[in-house]
Image (tube, rainbow, N blue to C red; front, side, top):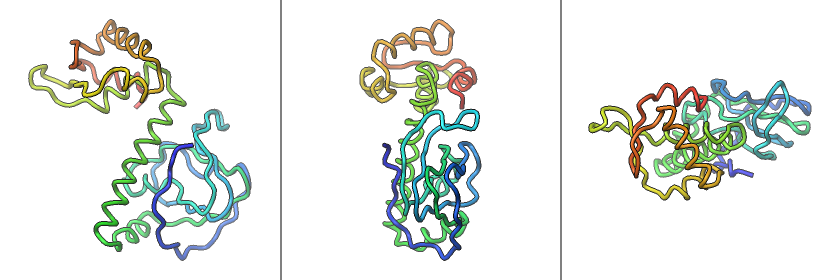
Amino acid sequence: MLDTTLPPLPEPAAPLTLLGAGTVLLHRGDAVDHIVHVMQGRVVLGVMADGLMAHQLGVVEGPFWLEAASGLLALPHAVDAVAETEVHVQYVSVDDFVAEVQALPEASQNLLMDMARSQRQQIEMGVSRLAKDADARCAEWLLRHAQPDELLGGLAVKFTQRKRTIAAQLGIAPETFSRVLRHLRERQLISGGGRVLGLPNPQALRELAGV
């Protein structure tokens, strides 16, 4: 299971709500207006399809701040969340949650934000492995690591790691990674070779990656 924990914050003075098993607590892609604090019970995280949890990423058990990183980073929810058992939850507004963080010492704030960014990246990678095929994962990775390149006159990716290492991060075999890059080059979605790849059509890559 992915590590989706953050250091504990003071418990909010919000009323408890009892929800039954099967209740959807978070929808992936929705804006975060409240942070859900699971006080008791188990929650399944993953990717839903047709109203069912099609791909399970992990299970968390209260007390637990559910997707707190998304609230701190002002990003939409990265996963779907469904109550596996009866759960007791508190709903805390993002403003109140952020205010609690901002009341902490600066060093603690910096630590929380660093952990939130790391957690978000970890969850996104886990979701990508669950819900996307190899082509989409590679396209998403290329877009995430793209930087402006004056020589190419657009975006480019510079490989700072061995391709075998990148393939392992994507959860695919090195041969599959090489095959996908070849297919992307044939479709003119990447150009060049060696340790620098140009991205002549970022929009097509985004459509392939589903982002």
